[in-house]
Figure 1 (cartoon, protein in one colour):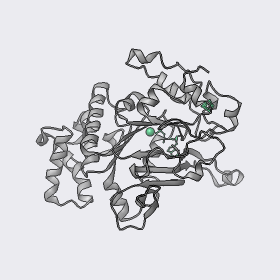
Figure 2: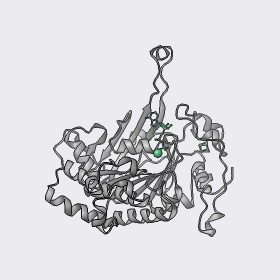
Figure 3: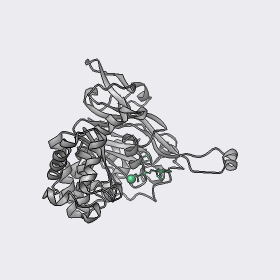
Figure 4: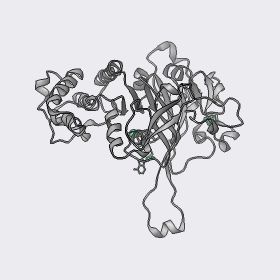
Length: 382
Ligand SMILES: Nc1ncnc2c1ncn2[C@@H]1O[C@H](COP(=O)(O)OP(=O)(O)O)[C@@H](O)[C@H]1O
Ligand code: SF4
Ligand SMILES: [Mg+2]
């Protein structure tokens, strides 16, 4: 959540994080002040009368995905998770800010720049995802792949399992004679077995769990360095959900990939994520190691999210105050002044209505954008 650039962090508040969480050389992907606004369609006449009001879907997001970690992006529906996913995947252009992908491989591309590294290692190479074009888009797509919430609607129903897996391989120039081996290998790995029984099946003949396994197989067939998953288990029932989460964990270990896992389901995020960032109305409000965020939340919104999910561990239940928050998430068309959570927050004071809280360091690797973060973390009731 803290910004990459020191100057953005200059603020009179002493506790504000002055350093990025992760050493520069560790990051796999980072967003810097990332914004994406949408504008509704209106007639010319009404546009002349009044300038269009933006839907601030993503409103200044600084997040870092570390190498080989699973970062959870959690928050209620409509908070902006899918927009962040689409921006990072390069499917949508940002309104502002940067997305820096650390490729680790020098590519002949105009978008490759030397980015100043604060460590003694000199400079590091990053791809500016927001500027990708031509060959560098293709390279990026081979490195960073997507898993969708509903794999069924993302498969072309005319393609068999073999065809679905063959498509990315042929687009990326993998020789025909190698494709069969790679397809069989990935089906074996994602347990769509016996392979021979799946190769010629169509997606509509697969169960929900098998379809999501195929979605994972398709995301991994090019051996990417990073996977971005948008609500990958939210359409599955509980037993299948656990198996898919286990498969994702296994693939991360085996392939040593980084992963962004966007979900409204805190219990799923808790099971597989190393770190969490909590998003509210287009902004990140808390960031930390999963255990720290779940056991000692330092933002009232996170507290409310946790209180809504019963902890299977009885010993933990009493630690979290049951915090009823008021009303529903407001529209991204009308972002409240000051702290955008203030109309719903039981802790809100006068300062909250006028001043937006910056990310405040609570502990090592733990940040909260709340003026009363310490109080919340210590479990003091509002
Ligand atoms: N293409 C679009 N046009 C207009 N508004 C959009 C568009 N995509 C998303 N939004 C709005 O942006 C906000 C964030 O949406 P989204 O990123 O889908 O959230 P989430 O994935 O957390 O549910 C919502 O208010 C949504 O209505
Ligand atoms: S800054 Fe104020 S309104 Fe915002 S979460 Fe903290 S206490 Fe609540
Ligand atoms: Mg979504």
